[in-house]
Length: 139
Image (cartoon, rainbow, N blue to C red; front, top):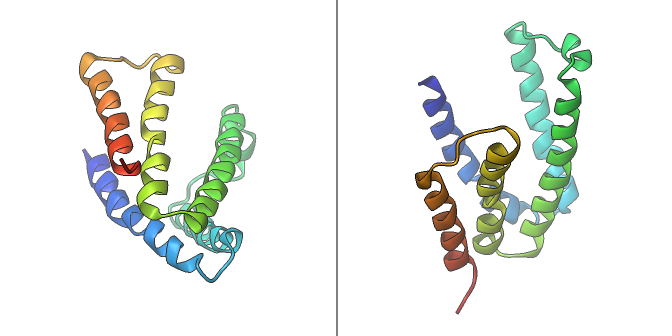
């Protein structure tokens, strides 16, 4: 269950990304902020790969590498768009809408990866959408 600790650490760390990005993009271009922050991510990942002797070069031509490249392309579009949205709009609106990727990813997992859609998961998806609607839109 080590993944739970990583998930909680990710939650704690990622919580600060949107507010700090919002402050940074008030005076700096969103694309510059995206480049620097994601460059720091790339360098950190490289240090971990080297320090733990993980494969890098062989992964570039692995049979699953096309999935890695596609994920990178979607990540690039998603993060650049997210940073631009944060630069232009309020964190309290942008983040919940962006957060719907959790719902969308879950649905992709069900449809394309044959993951089970239980009544509980379906209820969670519905509640997540309702939560985003309630926290995002004034009315």
